[in-house]
Image (cartoon, rainbow, N blue to C red; front, side, top):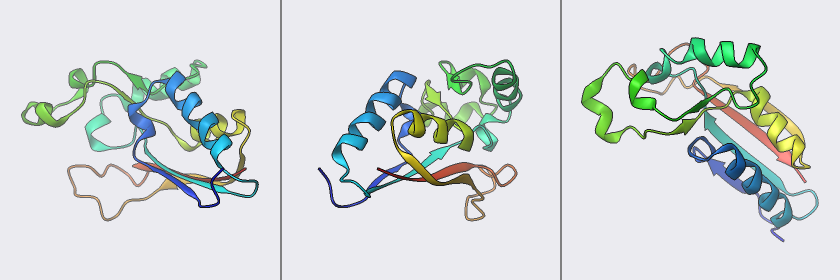
Length: 138
């Protein structure tokens, strides 16, 4: 088990739902009691996903368990000049989904919220909810 905190920064969004759950369960096993997990992940509220954000909202309202799974990200990208650096798959999360996933894996949520990234360049920022952050405890 791990006495040190674990940081998962900007990685969960590249995992499938199954991989996210498997990863969180492994992290819980690695942590000692009282150990902390820190997570930062992308949300649907970045400029690149502005065309997907309404779909995310509708998916969530319709009860989709994983409303942020995008298998064809290039279809939503307005700027075709960056497609060579944009993955085709992403699974964006908001604080509700991030907290739910950790809770279901047996972690206690200390804090979970959107992160306003004022330091992001203008071509990424949308409206102050670009990332979600979480602190969970075993």
